[in-house]
Length: 329
Image (cartoon, rainbow, N blue to C red):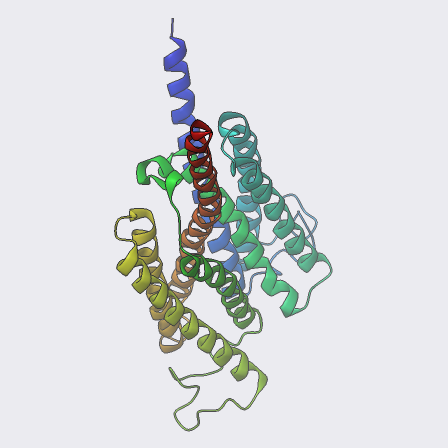
């Protein structure tokens, strides 16, 4: 007979394994979506959803059809996995404050990105609406990633439960993740408006002129400028973390990893232009921004917890000050 303790351990191990696989599946959804856009395979199945050309088994197989259909299958599988993980995490670690919120967000946003993708196929959408598709998937991925970190009890390993951040650090965390989402949107807009190679030079648009002259060039250069500001901002936050948070490893390493990822993002973005849109580099570009957003999301969770920890510490301080005064009376 297996003891109750062993049963609990087996369930915990199974949950950790499933959470890891689900996070990986969500990463494949993001990379798959980028692949569909980069290869212009969005209409590989025609204006039919969920089937390809209204057929269960397509009669004519093309590379675009394989890419689009694979993305749909992976997204569908990931959706089921996220639903299972959400329910499982809710029951297993529902006592942790963030669990239920993350479980709901992960599934709702994955369904939302699926609906936008389906609507784009059946009815068509503007490039500005389609650019939201990647960003919505990114939120779902971040929620699944945070759930996985909670399941692995990362907070306990880094003593994140007692973490208190100063006002400036919280400003950097909240501001950067919001701004990062804007940069992600501009990058998605570059892809959907086919402006990736609108400016053949780097860092300026053209060797003969600095100022863009048409819409696609403005979109490309706008994204480059937005990305440059994000790199500077993350660098400033990292310097502050290194200077004041060496004793808090989770903050210290969180910002160092963010800086490394954003620099890799810049390098791959540059190489996209210099290699004339190499597919593997373009997919690496999508991979690095996904990882960066995940790390920033964890820092946001720490910042929210910091408010709670500070309030809790103040309540404890008040109660300890009240006891001596009562004794004096």
